[in-house]
View 1 (cartoon, rainbow, N blue to C red):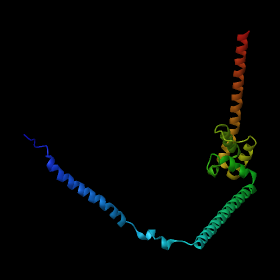
View 2 (view 1 turned 180 degrees about the vertical axis):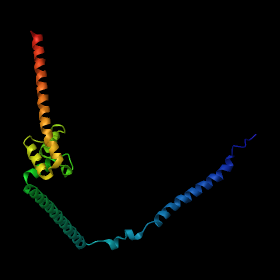
View 3 (view 1 turned 60 degrees about the vertical axis):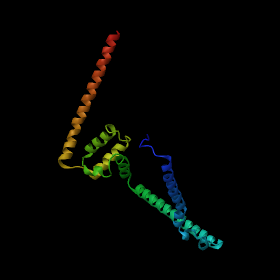
View 4 (view 1 turned 45 degrees about the vertical axis):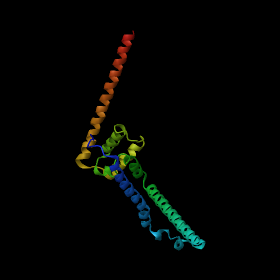
Length: 199
């Protein structure tokens, strides 16, 4: 008894032949499709041939353009160098306190930050000392009075602010003397305790 799922070998042969014919016909059409896609004008070498004179002319044109570009780049570099030199000369012509203030303060603050404040001389001294010792600003000791004096000149405070800042000076001085005396007494007591233990 023959099963329904199995095909007879005689019935398979014509379908295989048909599939093979379709496949061969498809393969035969591929070159024809490829040839149809070619644009002959892109390969028309007869019209695109350049003579040696034309090539020399093109090379000369490229060389002229390259030299023009080099000259333009050199001119731009010279202009940038002249601008930088003029800027340095302008900076060097300004007074020392102005240059010092800008070089030290703008390392951490935006330019003109100090123009938003006003203090008397003791107030600016306190601000600059705070920047050096509490905020680790890169300041030399000799630069502190120059910066504080210049800031007082351009942004000095008057009235109540000046009175309060000048009044705070004796209080700060007294507090520092008291603190220094307290530390000194404590150090002496600690030394005496150590000496008593060693005896």
